[in-house]
Length: 462
Ligand SMILES: *Cc1c(COP(=O)(O)O)cnc(C)c1O
Image (cartoon, rainbow, N blue to C red; front, side, top):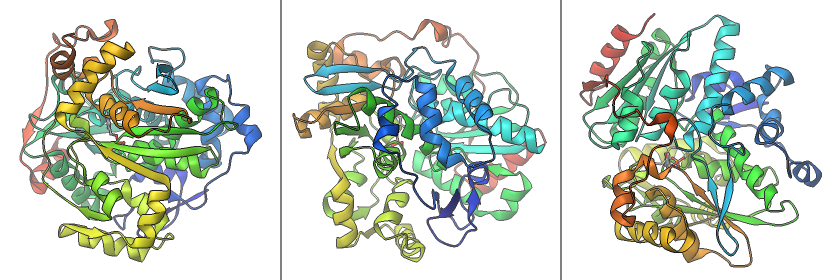
């Protein structure tokens, strides 16, 4: 299985090299050259299967021959062993034909643990076998950073630097990044927004001298291996509701378009998905684009769902690549136009996007109202991101098709908004109840490429 760049000018790579490099050298994102298909019988066999075995069967064809079956199964077992729920991704029912997929039982209480815990295992295995080291640099609006630090802390062959926007992450998110004491993990609070952090990260990847010097690797949601790990729970949840013999729809609280793009891959593999619904907060570039075709950057507005405070959705490039018939030149041109503010999706491409995706936008007041209502009427305490999903799903769903809404974080990760809306202070699970007592370690840093590169060169261990 080969991976090609969405901008058409980087060499095709095997799975492992695409994973270790993250962003392609032409600035594009890696996608599989072809999408493996799951037959109806293969999908039926997932019904009642463990999450780990489902993960093995769904991901196996994408991984190629570098890993043997036994090693890959072991890595998957290790990745999910630290989760606080035996089902890993349990489904609970909210209303007739509306289900919540709880993706927050991992070590940092957000869905990003599904991909990051696996990536930690895959990196360790690959680097150990090759006798190599890498420097991982990531940008985060909160949850990616904590998940990455948790997945890589203490690993021999890796230094991890995480850039987060100073003052714009929740206290639980910040503490999950700043309290691990291992010398190979480094939290950097940048003076700027998440989009600034993500832009500096892209600058570092595009500086090939720096990239080679520190052996830069990326684990942001642009990393194909992360998307792949997230494809699994679309299959596991749909199978438990009767797929492939029954279609389902999904609503996904979305920022960088990574999680919902995994759903799109599941659909391309043959999973009968009726609708994939994008749910955004007031930072609604995706909702505007899917409604009108205009992909125009606005200012980032801080919200109570900070993990979706994004105006450039990196993974959307992968969807565009497909609806532009995999024309790397067309994507390069769109991304050039984005540098100066935005672009218009062609009519044909927009129609193809709308065949698969719908979208909705939720205000701050509506988010709080849904947290209160879900608590009162559905018996569920939702985090603000998940509440945005449930609100859009309730407004748009077709009552005859099962709807699965992704719950992307535990309410205790965003206690202020949850308490404001519901009157309930959501407690942290016991295993992390001392988070507020542990000492913090963080470097405040300017939104400046050179300052960042200097700091990384001087601080990494090799
Ligand atoms: C990252 C995150 C999202 C957005 O996911 P994308 O893959 O960027 O669309 C939504 N909710 C929570 C809690 C997150 O951490």
